[in-house]
Amino acid sequence: MKIQTALILTVLGASLLSACGREPGATAAGAGAGPREIRVAAIENGAKMGFEPSRITVKPGERIRFAVENRGTQDHEFEGEEGGLEEIVVPPGKTRTVEWTAPRTPGEIEFVCDLPGHKEAGMVGTIVVAE
Image (cartoon, rainbow, N blue to C red; front, side, top):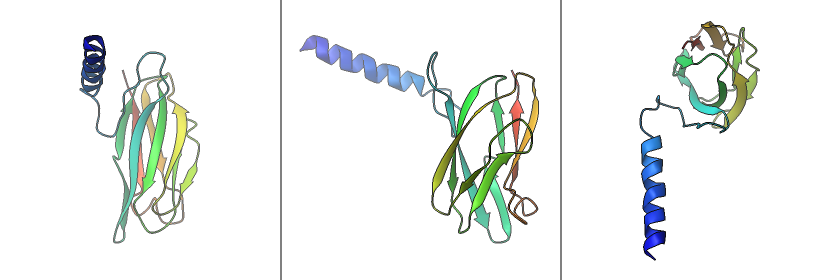
C-alpha cells in the first residue's frame, strides 16, 4: 500500500512540475511526445474581429498543433499566408485542429481568416519563429 501511495504522489508531483513555465494557451510536449498544442480563439466584437493570441512564438522546426476555437457567430478560417500552414474552416461554437511544423529559419509568418472582409476587420496574427 505504501508503494502505491508513493507512486501516486510521484505522478502527481511530476504533473504539477510539468505545468510550470508554459506560455498561455500551450500544453507541454516532452521529448518524443507529439506536437505542442497552442489554443487560438477566433473572436468577434461588433465589427471588429481577431485572434487571441494574435502573436505566437515557436522554435525553428517545432511541431505544433493549433486548436482553433470559433467564439463568434459566423465561420472563420485559420491559415498561414506563407510557411505551409494549411487552411482550416471553423464553424461557430466549434474547435478544429491543424498540425504544422515551423520552418527551420527564424522569421515571421502571418496567419489570417481569409473570408471576405475578415482580414480587413482585424483577423490577422503573427507567428514568430525564434530560438
